Image (cartoon, rainbow, N blue to C red):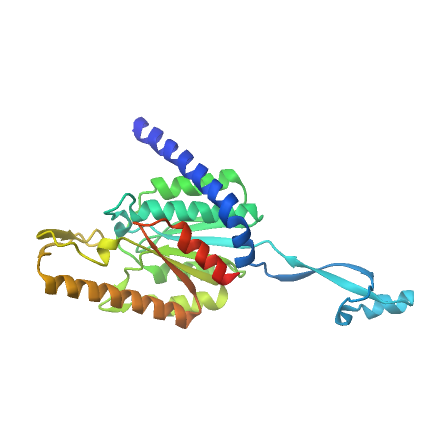
Length: 295
């Protein structure tokens, strides 16, 4: 147990170094322009200067001093940022160097460090088929390290996925508008239909939502390697399939493409920005692309 904790602490340090470096070098400016504050807040009154917007003239002060004064506004920059992170059984899947859990942890760490660099609060909701843990929004490095530690070490009670339940919890727990990153593989279906579209629509009306789909390439395309035993980490069901069957591989791929199309359609209808992040590729590019699109 002590050895396992030692390894977790070493991983925590590695994740912190990488996330802090990336947030400084790449994401700081992109994040600031992509995720704006709540609006403009009154700052001060000063004398009118040529070129100032006459719509901002403070007529009461102008009348008192018998010369024009204007109201000055500044961007109300501070945000509350929430990370909704899927900790269901399927996050442990990975056929590349990293599992989906590894990628979600590192992406969440980068977002957290980017947030505190911009003086924003950051909070977390960990969810499976229930809300597993809620860490209220706060600032500071110690707070972020606690978040990363929980993402690495947390053992969920549930194994399945209920994205809608997490979104409803967010809507009730966070009263003021916030920026929310939803990190999941979004394998949450009732038959062939996504189960969380209504909750997504409601949450996106209240909050600025961003969907980050993390997937493994083998969930989209099967290799031709003969007999394979497939297991569902969320239900415990397993089955054998013949991956040398070209027809089966084609149907498997078509089903994966359809799932992605359904998810993108749900995001579009809800007005939610999103990005796809593969465990086989560097997650920096899709994040930077997303930030640039929003900036």
